[in-house]
Image 1 (spheres, rainbow, N blue to C red):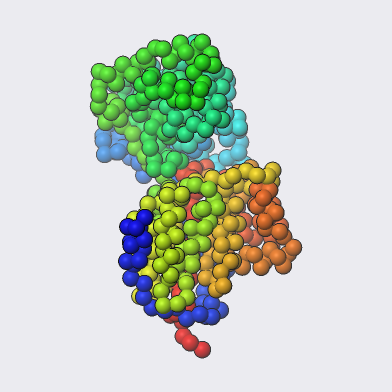
Image 2: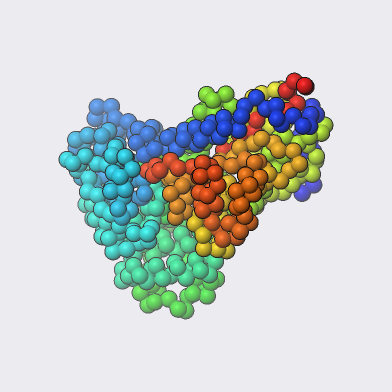
Length: 532
């Protein structure tokens, strides 16, 4: 802690702010609101399914280039996919590879084709003469019989390939529920019951995935095993913080390092071992083929010639493109981190502190302000180095007279449910940040946006919302009790009623998902404005 405090105090904070000049900001709040929305749109556009596939997949004659590798095409290409964004990925992949594609199967969410068609996303649909079969399932994002049938078709296709074939695997968020393949004699219901009990007992996502992989034929590298000896090329659109290949859709093309004893240790830890169905015990008593391969082939599966995994879309990529858009709009971009997590209350507090840090009056921001920012780091998944780097940039902005600053971040915070209202983590975060920005003696003039890149925040029609330091006064003038809406987790209703919903972010269904994007625009410091 002493090192962190020393690091925060070592920042060279110079040039006093002149108090009372907020009204002299040359750019209006509506201008910052418009630019924040434009930056968010650029982030979403950068990770559209067709764009990421074109970025990661190239064809030159009979050569397919992906991930720095070249594959010879001789009418030997097959395609499988699973996930919420896979349909658009498959449509673009088929346009690129053309007649070299022999056959394909994709498992996509129930009703997705009609939904895309109704939202004007026809380019994400397959052509009528497509060689790819579309199978819908996993209604309400839960594995079901339809998804089970889809997974079996995918497994059959992969199992019939030879060493001359290439299997192109398309993976995006939601892929785990769309690729259920319980190891026999276990049923899908029995597998779901085990994972549901683990989640209820407080198991971590890593523990849940370890058990899922052990109970599945296709997860944890199982799909790549089925396709052996064909070459496997996986294009991945990541919706997981840090882009861990083994966690995205439970890693069907990434070898699992988990051993049976590790799985039993997890089940023992949560006191579930004795209550397991006999079929689950039978599965765990056997060494799966992938585990035998681990013993014979100690090197990771993904670095072998057999398999290539390439992340073609992620939150980091979205933030980088948002940063370029910010420059076009005359903003100074700063990427804080792509892995913001933790409770929205802590995340909101962080953004409020960063705004105060950038615009605090006096000779320099109080040392305790930097210290509190750094102390929040572990709670919100941000390294101290990234926080110090960001604060240094904010200090330089004050010192050298740059224009408005665009602070960018991404991730997936969590909300504690205490009510039964309509909302989502993005709208609740925006609401809480608005309170933070409204609470200071001197308004910073900051504008904050939080939006889900899939276009849907919780069970609502909005992706998120835009807020600023005028939120509290605006709500009070319209008779809206912010605390009451927060207690009921009713942020969508709040923003819908506030100023006729103008603060809501409503891009519609985007067809992609790389978690959330946060945009905070900090106007130029008042100290640079002329004294009147």
